[in-house]
Length: 409
Ligand code: PLP
Image 1 (spheres, helix red, strand yellow):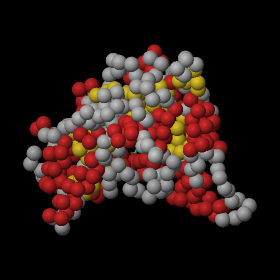
Image 2: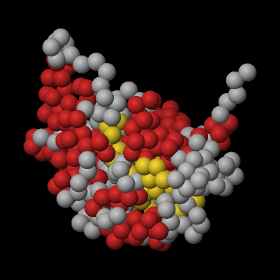
Image 3: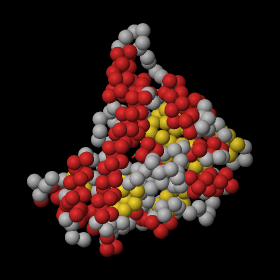
Image 4: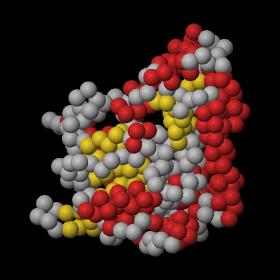
Protein backbone atom coordinates (compact mmCIF):
# COMPACT_ATOMS: atom_id res chain seq x y z
CA UNK A 1 0.00 0.00 0.00
CA UNK A 2 1.26 3.45 -0.85
CA UNK A 3 1.60 5.79 2.11
CA UNK A 4 1.23 9.52 1.64
CA UNK A 5 3.72 12.19 2.57
CA UNK A 6 1.90 13.21 5.74
CA UNK A 7 3.59 16.60 5.77
CA UNK A 8 0.98 17.62 3.20
CA UNK A 9 -1.72 17.15 5.83
CA UNK A 10 -0.13 20.00 7.78
CA UNK A 11 -0.85 22.50 4.99
CA UNK A 12 -3.43 25.09 5.81
CA UNK A 13 -6.17 25.66 3.21
CA UNK A 14 -5.82 28.62 0.88
CA UNK A 15 -8.84 30.20 2.52
CA UNK A 16 -7.84 33.77 1.76
CA UNK A 17 -8.58 33.98 -1.95
CA UNK A 18 -11.46 31.51 -1.71
CA UNK A 19 -13.12 33.65 0.96
CA UNK A 20 -12.54 36.82 -1.05
CA UNK A 21 -14.06 35.19 -4.14
CA UNK A 22 -17.08 34.03 -2.12
CA UNK A 23 -17.66 37.47 -0.64
CA UNK A 24 -17.41 39.13 -4.05
CA UNK A 25 -19.77 36.55 -5.54
CA UNK A 26 -22.34 37.09 -2.77
CA UNK A 27 -22.09 40.85 -3.20
CA UNK A 28 -22.54 40.56 -6.95
CA UNK A 29 -25.56 38.33 -6.50
CA UNK A 30 -27.19 40.85 -4.19
CA UNK A 31 -26.16 43.81 -6.41
CA UNK A 32 -26.16 42.52 -10.01
CA UNK A 33 -25.47 45.99 -11.46
CA UNK A 34 -22.51 46.75 -9.18
CA UNK A 35 -19.45 48.00 -11.04
CA UNK A 36 -16.74 46.23 -9.05
CA UNK A 37 -13.13 47.46 -9.21
CA UNK A 38 -10.53 44.81 -8.41
CA UNK A 39 -7.51 46.13 -6.56
CA UNK A 40 -6.75 42.79 -4.97
CA UNK A 41 -5.07 41.19 -7.94
CA UNK A 42 -1.36 40.43 -7.85
CA UNK A 43 -1.26 39.91 -11.60
CA UNK A 44 -0.16 42.24 -14.36
CA UNK A 45 -2.71 43.48 -16.88
CA UNK A 46 -0.74 45.32 -19.59
CA UNK A 47 0.11 43.23 -22.69
CA UNK A 48 3.62 42.07 -23.55
CA UNK A 49 5.90 44.73 -25.03
CA UNK A 50 5.97 44.69 -28.88
CA UNK A 51 9.70 43.85 -29.02
CA UNK A 52 9.06 40.72 -26.90
CA UNK A 53 6.18 39.65 -29.12
CA UNK A 54 8.40 40.14 -32.21
CA UNK A 55 11.21 38.06 -30.68
CA UNK A 56 8.83 35.25 -29.78
CA UNK A 57 7.19 35.36 -33.23
CA UNK A 58 10.60 35.00 -34.83
CA UNK A 59 11.38 32.08 -32.52
CA UNK A 60 8.09 30.39 -33.48
CA UNK A 61 9.11 30.69 -37.14
CA UNK A 62 12.50 29.15 -36.33
CA UNK A 63 10.76 26.20 -34.68
CA UNK A 64 8.80 25.64 -37.91
CA UNK A 65 11.90 25.15 -40.10
CA UNK A 66 14.13 22.08 -40.10
CA UNK A 67 17.34 24.17 -40.13
CA UNK A 68 16.44 26.14 -37.03
CA UNK A 69 14.15 23.73 -35.17
CA UNK A 70 15.15 22.95 -31.55
CA UNK A 71 14.18 19.99 -29.40
CA UNK A 72 15.02 19.54 -25.71
CA UNK A 73 16.89 22.56 -24.47
CA UNK A 74 19.38 22.84 -21.62
CA UNK A 75 17.50 22.53 -18.31
CA UNK A 76 19.50 25.45 -16.89
CA UNK A 77 18.49 27.75 -19.73
CA UNK A 78 20.03 28.74 -23.06
CA UNK A 79 23.38 30.50 -22.91
CA UNK A 80 21.99 33.48 -24.85
CA UNK A 81 19.57 34.28 -22.01
CA UNK A 82 21.97 33.47 -19.18
CA UNK A 83 24.54 35.77 -20.79
CA UNK A 84 21.94 38.53 -21.36
CA UNK A 85 21.10 38.36 -17.63
CA UNK A 86 24.75 38.51 -16.57
CA UNK A 87 25.38 41.46 -18.90
CA UNK A 88 22.06 43.24 -18.38
CA UNK A 89 21.24 42.75 -14.70
CA UNK A 90 24.63 42.32 -13.01
CA UNK A 91 27.49 43.89 -14.98
CA UNK A 92 25.94 47.39 -14.83
CA UNK A 93 25.96 47.06 -11.02
CA UNK A 94 29.63 46.08 -11.05
CA UNK A 95 28.75 42.53 -9.99
CA UNK A 96 30.52 39.52 -11.47
CA UNK A 97 28.15 36.61 -11.86
CA UNK A 98 29.24 33.67 -14.02
CA UNK A 99 26.81 32.33 -16.59
CA UNK A 100 26.70 28.94 -14.86
CA UNK A 101 25.56 30.60 -11.65
CA UNK A 102 22.30 31.65 -13.39
CA UNK A 103 19.50 29.08 -13.63
CA UNK A 104 16.55 29.92 -15.88
CA UNK A 105 13.20 28.62 -14.67
CA UNK A 106 9.47 28.87 -15.22
CA UNK A 107 8.94 31.04 -12.16
CA UNK A 108 10.29 32.50 -8.96
CA UNK A 109 7.44 30.66 -7.26
CA UNK A 110 8.80 27.31 -8.46
CA UNK A 111 12.35 28.28 -7.47
CA UNK A 112 11.60 29.56 -3.97
CA UNK A 113 9.40 26.51 -3.38
CA UNK A 114 11.83 23.93 -4.77
CA UNK A 115 15.07 25.25 -3.30
CA UNK A 116 14.25 23.79 0.13
CA UNK A 117 14.77 20.30 -1.35
CA UNK A 118 18.52 20.91 -1.10
CA UNK A 119 18.34 21.20 2.69
CA UNK A 120 17.96 18.68 5.45
CA UNK A 121 14.57 18.22 7.05
CA UNK A 122 15.79 19.34 10.47
CA UNK A 123 16.93 22.76 9.25
CA UNK A 124 15.13 25.66 10.89
CA UNK A 125 13.61 28.30 8.63
CA UNK A 126 12.80 31.92 9.42
CA UNK A 127 10.12 33.82 7.52
CA UNK A 128 8.76 37.29 7.94
CA UNK A 129 5.22 37.82 9.17
CA UNK A 130 3.30 38.85 7.00
CA UNK A 131 4.81 36.81 4.18
CA UNK A 132 4.43 35.57 0.61
CA UNK A 133 2.93 32.16 1.53
CA UNK A 134 5.03 29.95 -0.78
CA UNK A 135 8.12 30.05 1.48
CA UNK A 136 6.09 28.60 4.34
CA UNK A 137 3.96 26.10 2.44
CA UNK A 138 6.91 24.58 0.58
CA UNK A 139 8.65 23.99 3.92
CA UNK A 140 5.47 22.49 5.37
CA UNK A 141 5.61 19.98 2.51
CA UNK A 142 9.32 19.48 3.23
CA UNK A 143 8.56 18.52 6.85
CA UNK A 144 10.36 21.45 8.47
CA UNK A 145 7.47 23.16 10.26
CA UNK A 146 5.57 20.72 12.48
CA UNK A 147 1.78 20.81 12.78
CA UNK A 148 0.18 24.23 13.04
CA UNK A 149 -1.58 25.29 16.20
CA UNK A 150 -4.06 28.13 15.60
CA UNK A 151 -2.31 28.85 12.30
CA UNK A 152 1.19 29.03 13.82
CA UNK A 153 3.81 26.39 12.98
CA UNK A 154 5.85 25.53 16.08
CA UNK A 155 9.17 24.82 14.34
CA UNK A 156 9.14 27.97 12.20
CA UNK A 157 10.79 31.18 13.38
CA UNK A 158 8.48 34.10 12.57
CA UNK A 159 9.98 37.57 12.18
CA UNK A 160 7.26 40.17 12.81
CA UNK A 161 7.35 42.93 10.22
CA UNK A 162 5.16 45.93 10.86
CA UNK A 163 5.10 49.71 11.18
CA UNK A 164 6.51 49.28 14.73
CA UNK A 165 9.86 48.08 13.35
CA UNK A 166 9.63 50.13 10.16
CA UNK A 167 9.00 46.91 8.21
CA UNK A 168 12.53 45.78 8.93
CA UNK A 169 12.47 42.56 10.99
CA UNK A 170 14.77 41.92 13.93
CA UNK A 171 17.31 39.11 13.73
CA UNK A 172 16.10 35.74 15.05
CA UNK A 173 16.99 35.15 18.67
CA UNK A 174 17.14 31.37 18.23
CA UNK A 175 19.10 29.13 15.86
CA UNK A 176 18.03 29.51 12.24
CA UNK A 177 19.58 27.85 9.19
CA UNK A 178 17.63 29.39 6.32
CA UNK A 179 16.18 32.92 6.16
CA UNK A 180 13.70 34.13 3.55
CA UNK A 181 13.68 37.85 2.82
CA UNK A 182 11.64 39.57 0.13
CA UNK A 183 12.52 43.11 -0.94
CA UNK A 184 10.64 44.93 -2.43
CA UNK A 185 8.13 43.12 -0.30
CA UNK A 186 4.93 41.35 -1.10
CA UNK A 187 2.59 42.12 0.66
CA UNK A 188 3.81 45.28 2.44
CA UNK A 189 5.32 47.02 -0.61
CA UNK A 190 8.27 48.18 1.53
CA UNK A 191 12.01 47.72 0.95
CA UNK A 192 14.88 46.83 3.27
CA UNK A 193 17.64 49.41 3.31
CA UNK A 194 21.11 48.71 1.96
CA UNK A 195 22.55 49.05 5.48
CA UNK A 196 20.06 46.59 6.94
CA UNK A 197 20.68 44.07 4.18
CA UNK A 198 24.42 44.37 4.87
CA UNK A 199 23.64 43.51 8.51
CA UNK A 200 21.59 40.52 7.36
CA UNK A 201 24.49 39.25 5.25
CA UNK A 202 26.78 39.58 8.24
CA UNK A 203 24.24 37.83 10.44
CA UNK A 204 23.96 34.96 7.96
CA UNK A 205 27.74 34.62 7.81
CA UNK A 206 28.09 34.75 11.60
CA UNK A 207 25.33 32.18 12.04
CA UNK A 208 26.19 29.94 9.09
CA UNK A 209 22.74 30.52 7.59
CA UNK A 210 21.68 30.71 3.94
CA UNK A 211 19.69 33.75 2.78
CA UNK A 212 16.93 33.24 0.22
CA UNK A 213 16.59 36.71 -1.28
CA UNK A 214 13.39 37.13 -3.31
CA UNK A 215 13.67 40.12 -5.57
CA UNK A 216 10.72 39.47 -7.87
CA UNK A 217 9.76 43.17 -7.72
CA UNK A 218 13.24 44.60 -8.30
CA UNK A 219 12.08 46.47 -11.42
CA UNK A 220 9.84 48.69 -9.26
CA UNK A 221 12.69 50.08 -7.15
CA UNK A 222 13.23 53.83 -7.33
CA UNK A 223 14.50 54.46 -3.78
CA UNK A 224 18.27 54.86 -3.78
CA UNK A 225 18.83 53.52 -0.29
CA UNK A 226 18.36 49.88 -1.22
CA UNK A 227 19.92 47.34 -3.57
CA UNK A 228 18.90 46.04 -6.99
CA UNK A 229 20.76 42.83 -6.25
CA UNK A 230 21.82 41.30 -2.95
CA UNK A 231 25.28 40.82 -4.50
CA UNK A 232 25.83 44.57 -4.30
CA UNK A 233 26.58 43.75 -0.66
CA UNK A 234 30.01 42.49 0.22
CA UNK A 235 30.07 38.88 1.30
CA UNK A 236 26.64 38.07 -0.15
CA UNK A 237 28.16 35.64 -2.65
CA UNK A 238 29.02 33.34 0.25
CA UNK A 239 25.56 33.11 1.79
CA UNK A 240 22.83 34.37 -0.53
CA UNK A 241 20.70 32.91 -3.31
CA UNK A 242 18.81 35.51 -5.37
CA UNK A 243 15.48 34.94 -7.09
CA UNK A 244 14.33 37.16 -9.92
CA UNK A 245 11.43 36.96 -12.34
CA UNK A 246 10.25 38.34 -15.67
CA UNK A 247 6.66 38.10 -14.35
CA UNK A 248 6.36 41.61 -13.01
CA UNK A 249 9.43 43.06 -14.76
CA UNK A 250 8.12 42.29 -18.25
CA UNK A 251 4.55 41.04 -17.86
CA UNK A 252 5.47 37.34 -18.08
CA UNK A 253 2.95 36.02 -15.52
CA UNK A 254 1.27 34.02 -18.28
CA UNK A 255 4.37 33.56 -20.45
CA UNK A 256 6.52 32.16 -17.59
CA UNK A 257 10.19 32.86 -17.15
CA UNK A 258 12.36 33.62 -14.12
CA UNK A 259 15.80 32.85 -12.80
CA UNK A 260 17.75 32.00 -9.67
CA UNK A 261 21.38 32.95 -9.03
CA UNK A 262 23.42 30.52 -6.94
CA UNK A 263 27.02 31.70 -6.56
CA UNK A 264 29.55 28.89 -6.33
CA UNK A 265 30.66 30.06 -2.87
CA UNK A 266 27.30 29.30 -1.21
CA UNK A 267 27.64 26.09 0.78
CA UNK A 268 25.84 24.00 3.37
CA UNK A 269 27.13 21.16 5.53
CA UNK A 270 26.61 17.43 5.84
CA UNK A 271 25.87 16.08 9.33
CA UNK A 272 29.57 15.23 9.65
CA UNK A 273 30.52 18.84 8.87
CA UNK A 274 31.68 18.50 5.26
CA UNK A 275 30.83 21.56 3.18
CA UNK A 276 29.10 21.20 -0.19
CA UNK A 277 28.44 23.97 -2.70
CA UNK A 278 24.75 24.39 -3.51
CA UNK A 279 25.32 25.40 -7.15
CA UNK A 280 26.12 21.89 -8.48
CA UNK A 281 23.39 20.39 -6.30
CA UNK A 282 20.80 22.72 -7.82
CA UNK A 283 22.19 22.04 -11.28
CA UNK A 284 21.66 18.32 -10.70
CA UNK A 285 18.23 18.86 -9.20
CA UNK A 286 17.06 20.92 -12.16
CA UNK A 287 18.55 18.49 -14.69
CA UNK A 288 16.57 15.68 -13.08
CA UNK A 289 13.28 17.34 -12.28
CA UNK A 290 12.91 20.29 -14.68
CA UNK A 291 12.65 20.35 -18.46
CA UNK A 292 13.72 23.93 -18.98
CA UNK A 293 11.77 26.94 -20.23
CA UNK A 294 10.59 26.83 -23.88
CA UNK A 295 13.02 28.26 -26.43
CA UNK A 296 10.34 30.67 -27.67
CA UNK A 297 9.80 32.09 -24.19
CA UNK A 298 13.54 32.46 -23.53
CA UNK A 299 13.90 34.43 -26.78
CA UNK A 300 11.10 36.69 -25.51
CA UNK A 301 12.93 37.16 -22.19
CA UNK A 302 16.17 37.90 -24.02
CA UNK A 303 14.42 40.75 -25.86
CA UNK A 304 13.79 42.47 -22.50
CA UNK A 305 17.51 43.34 -22.48
CA UNK A 306 17.52 45.11 -25.84
CA UNK A 307 17.31 48.91 -25.91
CA UNK A 308 13.69 48.79 -27.09
CA UNK A 309 12.93 46.02 -24.63
CA UNK A 310 14.21 48.11 -21.72
CA UNK A 311 12.26 51.16 -22.88
CA UNK A 312 9.02 49.30 -23.50
CA UNK A 313 9.05 47.23 -20.30
CA UNK A 314 10.07 50.23 -18.21
CA UNK A 315 7.14 52.17 -19.66
CA UNK A 316 4.79 49.48 -18.36
CA UNK A 317 6.41 49.54 -14.92
CA UNK A 318 6.11 53.35 -14.91
CA UNK A 319 2.38 52.98 -15.61
CA UNK A 320 1.92 50.68 -12.59
CA UNK A 321 4.11 52.91 -10.44
CA UNK A 322 1.97 55.91 -11.32
CA UNK A 323 -1.13 53.92 -10.32
CA UNK A 324 0.58 53.12 -7.02
CA UNK A 325 1.32 56.82 -6.47
CA UNK A 326 -2.30 57.73 -7.18
CA UNK A 327 -3.56 55.20 -4.62
CA UNK A 328 -0.94 56.06 -2.02
CA UNK A 329 -1.31 59.83 -2.24
CA UNK A 330 -5.10 59.63 -2.64
CA UNK A 331 -5.48 57.59 0.53
CA UNK A 332 -2.96 59.69 2.45
CA UNK A 333 -4.94 62.81 1.53
CA UNK A 334 -7.92 61.17 3.24
CA UNK A 335 -5.89 60.80 6.42
CA UNK A 336 -5.31 57.06 6.03
CA UNK A 337 -1.93 55.59 7.00
CA UNK A 338 -0.33 53.95 4.01
CA UNK A 339 2.96 52.08 3.48
CA UNK A 340 4.72 50.79 0.36
CA UNK A 341 3.63 51.88 -3.11
CA UNK A 342 6.96 53.58 -3.94
CA UNK A 343 9.25 50.67 -4.80
CA UNK A 344 6.55 48.06 -5.32
CA UNK A 345 3.13 47.61 -6.94
CA UNK A 346 1.66 47.00 -3.47
CA UNK A 347 0.13 49.52 -1.11
CA UNK A 348 -0.26 48.42 2.51
CA UNK A 349 -3.10 50.36 4.09
CA UNK A 350 -3.66 50.55 7.84
CA UNK A 351 -7.32 50.04 8.67
CA UNK A 352 -8.71 53.15 10.38
CA UNK A 353 -10.23 53.11 13.87
CA UNK A 354 -8.45 49.85 14.81
CA UNK A 355 -10.72 47.93 12.48
CA UNK A 356 -9.60 44.44 11.58
CA UNK A 357 -8.60 43.48 8.04
CA UNK A 358 -11.86 41.74 7.10
CA UNK A 359 -14.07 44.55 8.44
CA UNK A 360 -12.07 47.05 6.38
CA UNK A 361 -12.33 44.72 3.36
CA UNK A 362 -16.14 44.54 3.80
CA UNK A 363 -16.48 48.33 4.03
CA UNK A 364 -14.52 48.84 0.81
CA UNK A 365 -16.57 46.19 -0.97
CA UNK A 366 -19.95 47.33 0.29
CA UNK A 367 -19.46 51.10 0.23
CA UNK A 368 -17.09 51.49 -2.72
CA UNK A 369 -17.39 48.20 -4.65
CA UNK A 370 -13.63 47.76 -4.38
CA UNK A 371 -11.99 44.37 -3.92
CA UNK A 372 -8.76 44.38 -1.90
CA UNK A 373 -6.82 41.70 -0.01
CA UNK A 374 -7.05 41.48 3.81
CA UNK A 375 -3.59 41.69 5.34
CA UNK A 376 -4.42 39.05 7.95
CA UNK A 377 -4.36 36.49 5.12
CA UNK A 378 -0.57 36.93 4.89
CA UNK A 379 0.10 36.20 8.57
CA UNK A 380 -0.96 37.36 12.06
CA UNK A 381 1.05 40.60 11.84
CA UNK A 382 -0.88 41.52 8.70
CA UNK A 383 -4.00 41.91 10.85
CA UNK A 384 -5.36 45.43 10.71
CA UNK A 385 -4.02 46.06 7.19
CA UNK A 386 -5.23 45.71 3.60
CA UNK A 387 -3.14 45.16 0.50
CA UNK A 388 -4.09 47.07 -2.62
CA UNK A 389 -2.33 46.66 -5.94
CA UNK A 390 -1.48 49.03 -8.74
CA UNK A 391 -2.06 46.50 -11.53
CA UNK A 392 -5.48 47.88 -12.49
CA UNK A 393 -6.16 50.31 -15.34
CA UNK A 394 -5.43 54.00 -14.75
CA UNK A 395 -9.12 54.79 -15.10
CA UNK A 396 -10.17 52.24 -12.49
CA UNK A 397 -7.39 53.28 -10.15
CA UNK A 398 -8.56 56.90 -10.23
CA UNK A 399 -12.20 55.88 -9.87
CA UNK A 400 -11.35 53.65 -6.91
CA UNK A 401 -9.67 56.49 -5.03
CA UNK A 402 -12.64 58.80 -5.80
CA UNK A 403 -15.02 56.20 -4.38
CA UNK A 404 -12.98 55.73 -1.20
CA UNK A 405 -13.24 59.51 -0.64
CA UNK A 406 -16.98 59.09 -0.18
CA UNK A 407 -16.74 56.38 2.49
CA UNK A 408 -17.65 57.36 6.02
CA UNK A 409 -15.18 55.53 8.25
N1 PLP B 1 7.92 36.02 -5.21
C1 PLP B 1 7.03 36.93 -4.78
C2 PLP B 1 7.35 37.72 -3.58
C3 PLP B 1 5.82 37.10 -5.44
O1 PLP B 1 4.93 38.00 -4.99
C4 PLP B 1 5.53 36.33 -6.57
C5 PLP B 1 4.27 36.46 -7.31
O2 PLP B 1 3.29 36.95 -6.87
C6 PLP B 1 6.48 35.39 -6.98
C7 PLP B 1 7.67 35.27 -6.29
C8 PLP B 1 6.21 34.48 -8.13
O3 PLP B 1 6.80 34.90 -9.28
P1 PLP B 1 6.69 34.04 -10.60
O4 PLP B 1 5.51 34.56 -11.36
O5 PLP B 1 7.99 34.26 -11.30
O6 PLP B 1 6.51 32.60 -10.22
